[in-house]
Length: 250
Figure (tube, rainbow, N blue to C red):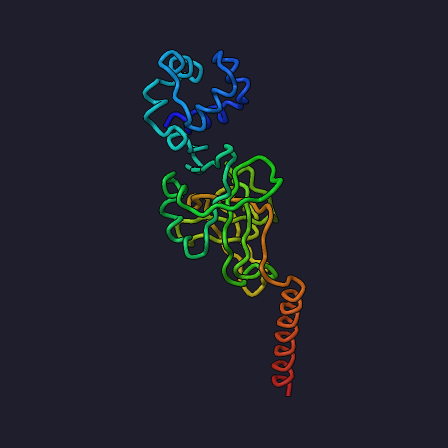
């Protein structure tokens, strides 16, 4: 486990390879070999590494520290977040497909489960913890079913902003993508669809397992055509209403 633990701990403490090499009094190339698993340090070097990161030698060489310390926040609001990192110690963007969402609600706190999720790469994304969710249904038109929303993790409820869109993992309703309003009772939010055919509804804070704020999306449909289809649908509904009222008046 040494190579992965070294990369993880260096990332955690925001130390470059050269800085760590200087602290350990070792060549940077040698440290690079340790992190790639090409060579193994002697006992003296292991002692220096353990002291540098305030961990035991046993932990350094036998335990998966990058899994044990994946939980980012644990407070009265939520208890999450499991993450994974790539070979360059950048946080992955795990992808939760529509089919995987039921299982996600059971395993979102399990690092082993999160590690098995497919990964996406999104260039030039700001620092943070991101996850991608597949949208299903037509409640958030013109965003079509099958689109993928990339979201930034929200640690605390007070970070939620009115009229923004969020992916909300709930214990009762599963995973939903909605526009939200915080309620005056400070104990719940109102989830609203951009498609007016769907009524808003209340979600108590106690039912929220995770919440992720929209950052970007990937759509696999023609957006202009989608908007035109939505407009045609609304015009058709209006026409049906007018015809109905005419019949009532007659």
